[in-house]
Image (spheres, protein in one colour):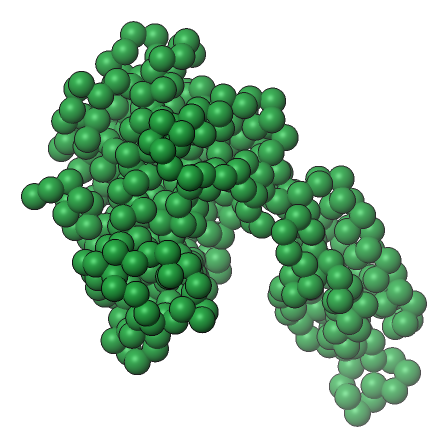
Length: 412
Ligand SMILES: [Zn+2]
C-alpha cells in the first residue's frame, strides 16, 4: 500500500466514526463518538511506536514522537476530534473520487456541489477528493487534520533519516462548541511552538483570529393571566424582540461585514412572558472594540427598559478567546519557518486571518504560539463538504519539511 492509499484509508475510517459535538450538554466530551475515535487513535499511535500514547481522563489524546536531533525544540501538532453540530455527522458515507475531472459533482442523494457555489473546484482538477452521499457533513473539519497528523507520525517513526526534534501530538475534543482547550495543559504540552491543522484549502498560514466575547441579556417581566393583563403584564418576550430590533443590522452584523470587520451577532433567543434571554456573539480583530460592542448592547437594553416600564434586565459578558495575532507577532519563528518550508518546496502560500477562532488561538494566549495551517477542507459544516486528499498529502510534506527546519534551530 502506498502512503497516499494509506492516507485515504485512514481518513475514510476516521470520518465514519460519528463525533458530532453536542452544545446542549455539560458532559466532556459532549458525545461518546469522540471517546471512541480518540481510543482508536491512541491505540494506533501506540502500535506504530509513539511514546506515552494515551487518552486522558477528559478524552484528549496525547503522544510523543521522540526527536532524532539533539537539542531540537519540541513542536506540538494538534487537531480536533469533534465535528460541527450544524449538519448531521451520523453514518457518514465517504466516497472517493480518484481523479476529479472537473465540473459539478453529483452526490448520491441528488444534490450537487457546483462550480457556481464552490468556485474553488476549478483549481482542483486532477485531485483525489472525498465527498459524502449528500445527507451528512464529511467531517474533514477536522479529521483531515487528524489523518494528516497520524500519517506524519507514522512517516517520521518509519523513516529515521527524516530529521526532527520531539513532536507532541494532541487531539482535542469539542472545539466546534468552544471547549477545545478547556482541559488543555500547557505544562503537559511542554512545547516551544505549535501548529493547528484545521484550515481550508492549501497554503494558508492563519496568523490572526477574531477576539471573541459572548453577551447574555436576561429580561425579567411580569406574567399574569392574559385576561387581566391590562396595566400589569410586562412581556419579557416582547421586550427581547424589541431589544434585538435595536441592534445594528446594516453594519456590524454577520450579514453586512467581511474581511477585517467585526460584528455583534444575536444568535439565540429563549423565553416566555415572565423571562427571556438573548445571547449575542461579539467579534472583532481589535480586542478593544469588544468593549464598544458591549456598550452598544447595554444602550439597547437600557432603551428597552425605558420602553417597557417595570422591566428589569441583567447583562453578562464572558471572554471566549483572543486574537492570536498579538502573540504571533511577538513570537514570529513559528510563522517564518512555515513560510520557509513552503519556499523550499516551491509552493505558493499566504498569511491569512480567520473570521473565527481555533484551538491555537487559546493555546497562543496561554503562551504557546500556534498558527493554523491549511489541510484541504472545503464547504465545512455543510452536507456539501468535501476534502482534497491531494492537499492533505501536500500539507503532510510541508509539515515534515517544516519539522526538519525546526530541528536546525536551538532547543527549548
Ligand atoms: Zn475545525
